[in-house]
Length: 187
Image 1: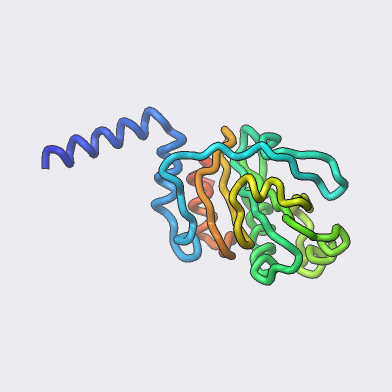
Image 2: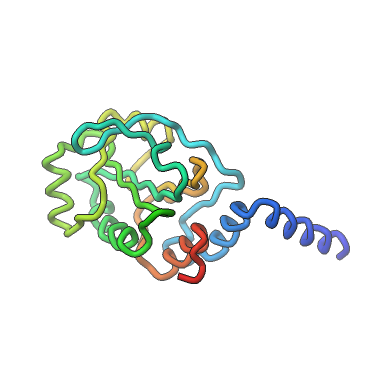
């Protein structure tokens, strides 16, 4: 019993010493529904700084979002689960997007820009980026196998969690978990 008490005190002090880690642990504890598929890493993993492009071809890297939490969603125009999930990501961006959080969508592989535009138009999404990873360089460097895959990146540019498959990112549980993660517990 004494060991358990010491472990509890140590864990609490470690959480106070590293508030970002404490937020991740608190967020992980809130997973329910589809979010149970979200796997939080025991240690944050550096994200590859491999280039991808905007719809118009301007070069980007995930490090361009340093300083904010980023939910990165890899998708494709031919992916049926992506079609179902994208409106939920749009709702999430509308509600939580801002200076400290952003949903970044990246079409990976062969996704012709006109097909990407048509995909978003058909499902009524107009607030998410049409970024592209046409040669799958970023996807390969991040170990993206299958679609959709969503990765949560912390403000320091580290992957803290990953979800394979579709999920209801607009659910109350997902939003509550993300609010804790990004430090908006009361919003």
